[in-house]
Length: 109
Length: 115
Image (cartoon, each protein chain N blue to C red):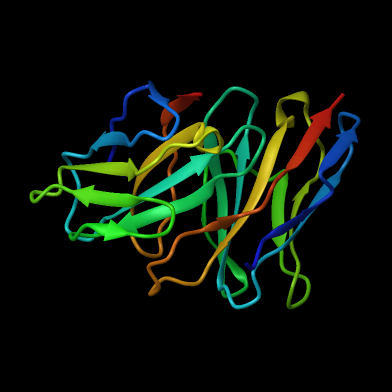
């Protein structure tokens, strides 16, 4: 399974944008880039995914590098409820999600 | 918004006892999964299930574990003879299918405590 590298932790101030980086230099052409988050005491929650182009949804934006070896999850205005562990996962259709340690995001009021 | 429902939310069992964890996946999803998370550790894949059979399983999913889809709505995980190290949060998940690119939907989990 292709691996991803994320910082262990990041801090943000409330109502400011947050950029969560992910490196995936061994990504294959068929790997989708998925992001999930896990709030305290809850199950993982799907955030966004993409293949080559940047993606936006109501929760976040995903910026994918042109060579696809890295990506950035963008929360446009962090709220206290966005404090969670964020996982960047390479996913091949029909395969399984493999969770790493993720990035623990803390949001300060 | 459709959700994956898991019951019970908490289960305490004695070592050696059998437990069944239950899940109701999203109705039009075709792939079903069980994951677990030991306290303070990573979320670990256990098993995936498609077309009424196991499509993939991890090393954790040994002969003590089994899964079943007994009817059109429920998806269960059975642990035949629980051990202390089976204590964890167990998450069920479902996804639309191999040719759909949307993400998994996870349930809120069952906290299993083996004493």
